[in-house]
Image (cartoon, rainbow, N blue to C red; front, side, top):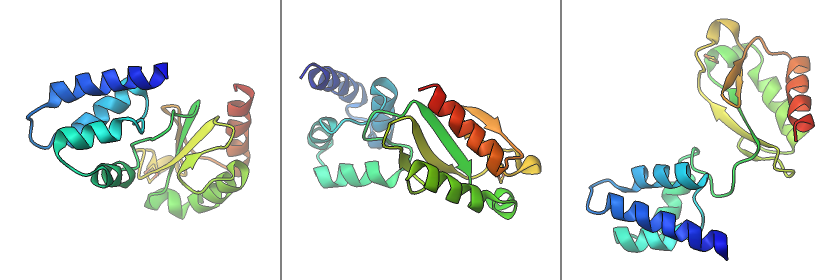
Length: 158
Ligand code: FES
């Protein structure tokens, strides 16, 4: 598979770069995700071998940190704020709306691959809560209607 061998060569060059540094796992995983877009499964045995850890330990770290992806990213990344100010001003209803429209729990990618959903804890827009970030842009003073419009725009852009 061409992707697999390309991924392996990226992973091995990054392993060389991080060789010998203490606490290399997290920086290494971040670098792999930055270069490839996610952590491919083929990387796990290579990392485990190089760092003298078990594959289960490596998979445990990858699944513990929500920022790591194990599949290519969706076209759009939507991060709904779940911190206190947004929670007190309707974020839970918006989360329920997202779960229903995307058929997801609070963290994952829609089946059509258009939208990835992730929680975030404060976007610095507390005075205008509830808020979310869509593809790096903050949208505040959200309502159910505005959220629907943002989701419709993502789908049209697909
Ligand atoms: S609590 Fe949501 S933006 Fe700060």
